[in-house]
Image (cartoon, rainbow, N blue to C red):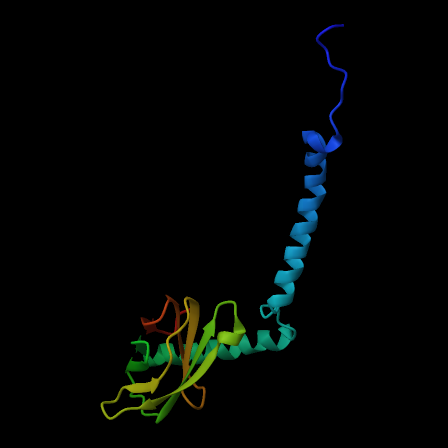
Amino acid sequence: MAGRSTETRPWYRQGWPWFLIALPASAVIGGIATIIIAIQSPHALVVDDYYKEGLAINRVKHRQEAAEQMHLTGLLRSDGRQLTLQLDSREPVTDANLQLRIAHATRAELDRQLTLHRLADGRYGTDAEPLPPGVWYLRLQNPDHSWEIRARIVTDGAFQARLSHED
């Protein structure tokens, strides 16, 4: 049997053992990565008190219906330093202050609550830092929470948003 070598290579120089080792090793690495992500990211999207959240939805709908009856819309502008709001409505809005909630789509620690003050020209405004990039939900209410208008924006700083009673 000339020409045939019966010498076997060590296991670590063959491909199939590494292939067999790679499958469970990738599962272990994936599991560790999942644990790290779970620890670093709070589970803010899970609502503990879902019954109260469901009841709150009905209150929100009443506020949106009130805004619809008023034909209330708003144009919110940000230049990265200041927010200005121009409201259009069938009924005049004369509140001295309005509450603006700016909520990040997935990271609750980035949420903001701002008070917009009535300016001499009838608009509303306040100082505000630029928003980090991402998807944001805006909710504007008057002090007694009788109406609410909303918007969804995708921004990386300065923005312009049309707020209305529609989701």
